[in-house]
Amino acid sequence: QVQLVESGGGLVQPGGSLRLSCAASGSIFSINAMGWYRQVPGKQRELVALISRDDTTNYADSVQGRFTISRDNAKNTVFLQMNSLKPDDTAVYYCNADVVVTIRLIVNYWGQGTQVTVSS
Image (cartoon, rainbow, N blue to C red; front, top):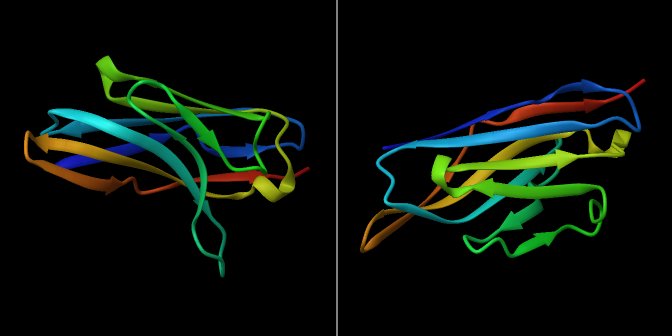
């Protein structure tokens, strides 16, 4: 069993910054792609940023230039540095990971989500 635990969400004023973390634990051989998604009530969950094991990154247009995704493979952890936050960034942010459980088995996992609220 694998768990993804997010931290770092909270309330921040427009223009401010937050850093989200997501640590994976459990039966992990290695982790391929890791990513952050977000969701607001009544809307579909959307991709925010992805990072491959070799640090190739991909961002949603809405966060390009403001958010930075990174990872620490030794600690099975992914980060999301969010700068110049806007009220439209308010959402529940979810961590996602493609975990190599065994040499023949890759399972996709989600974290429980962390609330980010951008408001004055």
